[in-house]
Length: 557
Image (tube, rainbow, N blue to C red; front, side):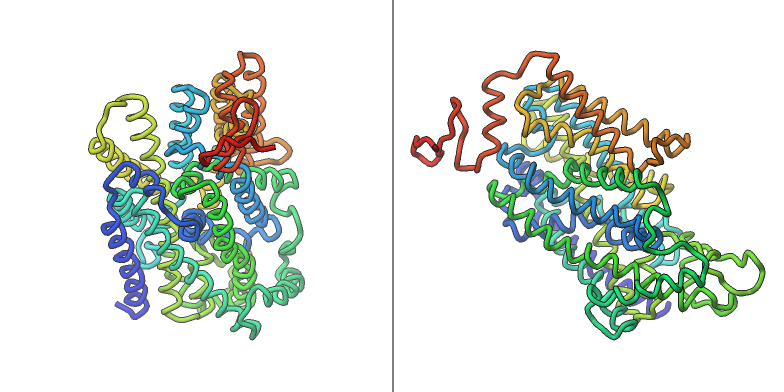
């Protein structure tokens, strides 16, 4: 048993013990604790938890690798995800918090006075979160598989056991404080290597300022190795695909149910806005670092690995080949590893770079712990959201409205356990790389929830028939395009499966608007309720006027 294994295991086990301890200490004792953490989380802590929930395995493990392999085209992920978060923070999160429900399907059901809308919303939530969770569990398998030097499938099963335990125990209350701890672990684990690489390669410890120098050298390196230029736009897809992917991620972010529900855990509408502001700050630390991470990793691979004798490759290559995520073949038989003969999955770039750059066993162990924190934090939030849809929206609000607190908690915990196991089994043989699977989840959210929520908050004429038609048609169009593009080779203007949300959202908006206009308008009470959402929490819209809520009947304006 080598020292690296012992150090990495120590980091992993210490972080696992921390998460489990937090979950036990914060065991949910009521449905309010289980679903919205008692609505008592402060904006700063909630922003940190949102950051952990948001910075999933796709962000931590996959994003830098995607940018490294795709170059300019990979920037669509950063711009789409960041833009979507701004949209969510300003256009939806405060208004949904003011409405005061537990889940997104519950908002839809009550806003549109429709049990059918709530049920369809719950089904859409399960589909979106289940798809997303496959990517997260697959990511945990990559990390644990490398650590134990076993197949990634075994690592996935270990991750399933851990998530099932702490998510089932603590509910949203436990998940919130677990995610705060996970954010601290993951952001430390992400920043330490990129700072050390910057210092090692450029002599400057500030990677955000130094990596531009490395990028300027890529043109000559690319020409020498005969590969496409790193910053040449649209070399891995069309301009339409770039824009469609960016829109899909942006709209999907604003419609992701497991992210939206985090804004329900704060006490007020104002706190929801501040949660979004803090979250953007915490998320920026990773998103601004990802391009630097990608540039340094690519530079090291080009200058220190490509061109080496096959017999003298560094030891780390053997370890990663065993995980199935790295392939090396001397295709031309010259005994030298060419750049084209190195096939590295984007899912392992962040994990492998500390070894590639020889940063030492402590940094490697820290990155392993950070990657696990990223995968587990998001997976835990997804499982809570699936549980909410099953236990609250379907079981309590539809099947058994008279269920007591104890039974509702029991159903919620069993829902998490079953959902985690099923998602874990699918993740044993994932249908794509982490960022691709996650993009599908965003596309599904863009096609179903984004039109429903935007029109539900900002268009008072939208009615139950419209939102049902919009969600069903938007979801169907998105799913159809994903399957047709991935398995049938069908594309429109070069837009592949990861850009499917563009078509789903367009169909969802169009169906919602046309059906709403063709059917009776909602009641006056319902329309005033929608208008009321747009005003600060201490103001109420009624009888065509805006009034202060705090004891006075003073009319505004």
